[in-house]
Image (tube, rainbow, N blue to C red):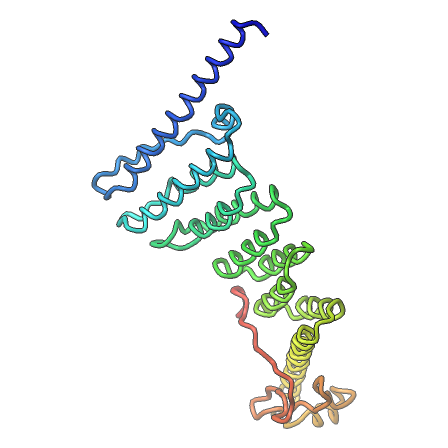
Length: 301
């Protein structure tokens, strides 16, 4: 390579570096302006695009991503003390950070918290938080905790138990993930009222684990879920009995004698179910089965 060529290549690098750090300086100044009291804010910050910054970063993508992540944290922290609680610049800062360094896991983990928390402690944008986690999962398929975080967002903020459970199951597929991921998926499914899916998850976990404590936990949940299914079936027959006889049955024996059952239904420990004056079935007080009533889904009556 000629001396002239080397000179111009070096000159281009210097110019590019100057542009890069000038952009960082501008970002610093303008974000600082954003974090002043509302009366002083100009709301005029213009963020450069991640792809453009990559082109002029001279290979320092990770370093620049760290800078942008630091600014995102400072911006968020400043807004916590700002009465306006306007987090409009936060999504852009996080987008640039993760574009520059798709493997900066801390930006996905905590960035999603900043985005999802409702005002005044966050941006209240659960949708953007989920999108951020999904980008992180795509770029970091081994980071099982990002799937778990996505499950938490669906569960805690959106009450979408089906998607929450599916996210935890995605996390559980990673061999590095702790066994609690599958347990969490089953637990969330219970909370959402999907008993069959939950039982299937617990059954699979029961057959794949050798830990006595885990086996007991899985068995207890399976028994409780089976009892809950049985009670719901008995309750339905009790209503039919009431419609036909004008009163509720006092025991499952009456349902059997009326030809509505082929035998006396027993709970998973072998003890007959009881029926109360309101026609609702339940466990005998001597039964060791534990039934936890899951909350209804948002669209259930």
